Length: 298
Image (cartoon, rainbow, N blue to C red):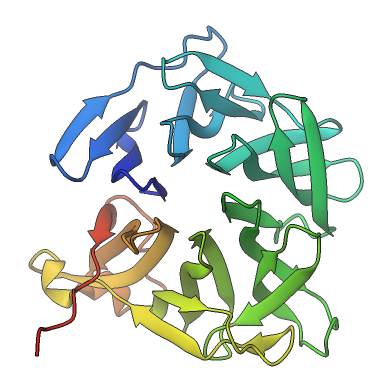
């Protein structure tokens, strides 16, 4: 689960086997799934829808076995493909209420990857945060109604005296960018509300952990955010013989409802330094929805 709108609709991309991939619209209020018709392009091997806006427009990408292209699905079900010029692969990640698409492109001529905001009405791209490292691409994802974008970027040296490593970023509507981390750990931002609450995940020796926080009071770019809560799914959710290894917060709506994914792995494999939890035989990924708990009445 990557995207949720303010109506509680969640777009779900699911692998059902080695050759089967489906996309669903989940109504969190009715707790019901609707299978979305596939992208009817003969060249398409699979398509993933990840983001959704208030009108119900969804975005993602599709592949033909050689490259990825961005994909937009209207509320009525019409698909539109788009690609960034001079780049091999284009990925749509989120879409604003006004229809602007945030995402990233890789395999570009110069540099290797870039974040972008795509305007389908004008077929134009606004690029930012170029990366020359093919193993650490810029990833732009959450976007607000005002056009603010969050994501992650691998910094090499300054700006703002930040050290090397993976930082989350917030790109403001005027183009200025703020880098930040949570608990001094590699940090990736993935979703943002119109009021500025940000979700994502951090990485440390214990795995990946979701977070929700705000940049309010951030002393300077490259610093730690202070108003933050870590988010991990309960350990009791794991199947017998398995342990939870990661929680990835991916999206948030204006009511504070968070969606994402969590991973479990065979306990014996997770305890082995050489164990491969990424092997489907050893682990599995699931989606989650986290709803804020209302304060207790006094």
